[in-house]
Image 1 (tube, rainbow, N blue to C red):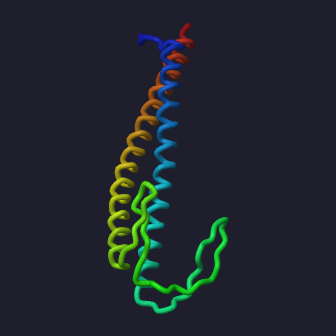
Image 2 (image 1 turned 180 degrees about the horizontal axis):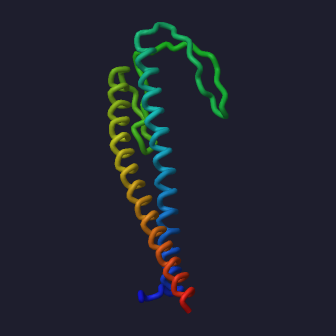
Image 3 (image 1 turned 90 degrees about the vertical axis):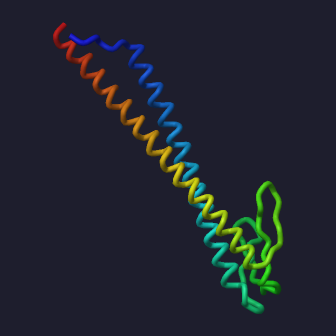
Length: 146
C-alpha cells in the first residue's frame, strides 16, 4: 500500500500551484505590454516612413486625454524618438526608423523569451495539478479501504 499524502503535503502543493499561477499571470501581463510596445514601434516606424517625404502633411496630434488636434507637419524629415529613461533625441527620419526597428527586434526577442517562460510555468502548474489529483485519488482509495 502506498503512503497516504498528508494534509501538509496537500497544502504545500496548493501553495506551489498558487505561486506558479500568480507568476504565470504576471508573465502574461508582461507579454501583453511587450506586444503593445511592438505594435507601437511598428506604427511609429510606418508613420515616420509615410511622412518622411511629405510636404505639409496633415496629421492628428495627440494633446492628451484621448484628444487630438489637426495640424500640418513642417519637418517631416525629422523625428523625436524616446531613447528611454525620459531621454528623447531628434534625428533624421531614417535614423528614427532604424532606432524603432532595432527596438522592435529587441522586444521581439524578449517576447520569445517571455513566451518560453510562460510555457514553462504552465507546465509546472499542470504537473502540480496532476500530482494533486494523484494524491486526492490515493486518499480516496485509502479511505475506501478504511
